[in-house]
Length: 243
Image (cartoon, rainbow, N blue to C red; front, top):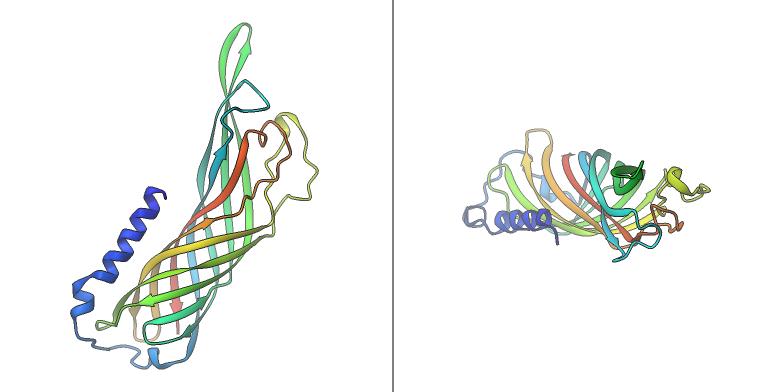
């Protein structure tokens, strides 16, 4: 797991294990009947950074001039409605269908020979996606302390890339593109904070989505042949509003 995922998990464990949160007597202020509702709704606004888990072959099969490949994360955003079913005071099932705008970059390093001299040549291939995300998350929350609570989430997400170029006829040579599959599947883990305000509940959430399906459409061109697997990696920072 990446250092970022370890940091998020450590934050979640700290919040849930905090003696202050667990030892204090529950004192409810705003929205006193909020937890008594069987379900409630809201919406999210989120900032994302998306990237790939990149697995390459030990030996690049198409060109001995290719020196390295790297994946770079890029910013994007999500928005959508939220529905939550309260299974108990501290456990709820959440469904957050959202539209997600994501952008990733694959950077290739080649060497070229020009007039007998060796020169470095970098090529960037952008992979842009517009996803419809369909996540189901289990939310595990602490008891409220005044108007505050902390929580952890785990879940599964199915995604459909509405901007996928899977049906595009690819080319060869330097003008080729990197195509990915339309559907994706990912596990999710994260945590957050709930603030019970006078008229609605406001939340801050940090979550990581790790895809477990190979998204690469192998076209055997100079950009895809060196790659064995591409899997999605998204870090999502969300603002939630629930009534």
